[in-house]
Length: 303
Image (cartoon, rainbow, N blue to C red; front, side, top):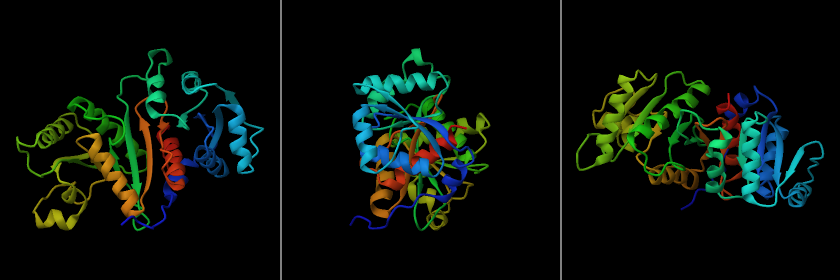
């Protein structure tokens, strides 16, 4: 049964995002109803100063549909998706925006352009996706990473994913995040490669003095349920109280986040970090709360 609970934008995300009002953002291929609606919501909350990129007549049509006058904002006309992605990347390169928001184009087109060396948007970090998940019953967020960008990351890449998530958690005032490295078991066993990798990541985190509690492997129940951890006699700083779930692969993270959305009514704020500017890559199927929350989270990540 799908949940009928309405997703709610976390107040803390809006509060923190409003500390830097009217941040300049580019909306790439903005000629889509959901992109326009979420942009207006963000403008009404004084969060963004949008630059609309895409087919001008279609952008103006969509804004007119919701009676939103955008005559004081910039529109950059582009005839196709690739041109629009290039225009957004150029604005980021030239320090004219601090966030890119995906509109009506495929994520792979946008990110392929974003990754081109000529735009100098990638430095020493690896890009990764973070979901900031909250429910109406519990406003305390849980982060899922990476469930949308890196499909089957190697251990070295997972260390980047780990650090990206910890950096963001600190920006929303979690001073020492608790990270569970997920597998299908709490014991490292050779027949389950993800459990062995989880142990390796934990050991590397300790060796590199990462400022977080990092433990793995942990199964999902042991990571989030104090009762499950107690029953299984798992005692460490993370078990039962994880802030961040570092998943073994994209399929796991994608499934977890969508289970929370469709069965629990969760608000999923999703964005890509690790580059010069964060990228909001919401889906056309995402609810309005998730789209607005994603914009707010990306603004926080940008600072």
